[in-house]
Image 1 (spheres, protein in one colour):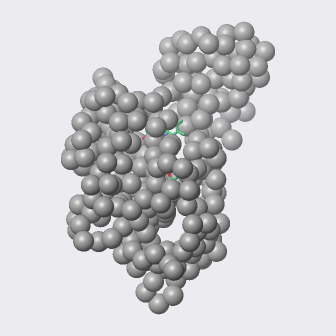
Image 2 (image 1 turned 120 degrees about the horizontal axis):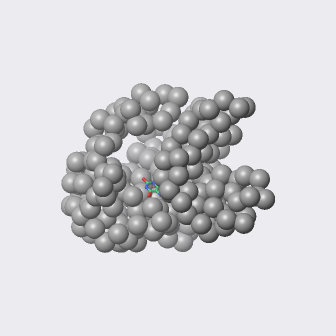
Length: 254
Ligand SMILES: Cc1cc2nc3c(=O)[nH]c(=O)nc-3n(C[C@H](O)[C@H](O)[C@H](O)COP(=O)(O)OP(=O)(O)OC[C@H]3O[C@@H](n4cnc5c(N)ncnc54)[C@H](O)[C@@H]3O)c2cc1C
């Protein structure tokens, strides 16, 4: 028999957990379930910010959002700024600390403590979390969604898709499976491109510098034309380059 909830959330990452808690903060009588295909919720979150979780930023604004369509983020960035994030997280036990550039981290400097506080809040609010539960398809009939998983069916009035995309790879749950399912339900998708990733380069020079870190001005030239630059700590690796300025520039490289 299908399990019934007012709201089913697909994905137990940061977005899914925060959505569930926000629903409960507004109305505790709403029944909420999270369906997560991995064996635990928040697996990607634990790896973020080098294990410290760069959770927010004092200077969140639209000018700093990089996209072909910045209006897409306007509502979220205007209504859910750093004050909102700081208030929301302090309510569930995560206090922010800031570095000199305005980056926010949990006071513990441990991403795992953010995941723990989210998990405890889900328990306190009575959100049912189903792990090892991969959504295979869903359909809508009249006012109800029927969600098929490898762990039985779920029926709900509202369905939230918080399944992330490709960042971090399969081990962190990013297999793009929901994209296909959404397409089957008539949603249009846009082409995805990598961003905030390390860069592979020719290895003869960088290999010999493997492990070295230097503060450097990094300039990206495309077909001989200077394109963009950034400053920060560059890490030499056996495959190429890493570090914050490399990651910032990586979205321009295809
Ligand atoms: C190494 C690394 C470091 C990062 N550091 C930072 C940082 O410091 N600060 C920052 O702001 N961002 C950082 N990010 C980006 C940040 O982690 C992501 O933007 C954020 O985790 C996205 O959250 P999400 O809930 O949208 O998606 P996810 O965390 O990807 O969660 C989606 C969940 O949905 C599940 N799922 C997917 N499909 C299905 C399905 N069919 N059925 C059931 N479950 C499904 C997945 O298993 C996954 O657990 C980092 C990313 C990486 C990879």
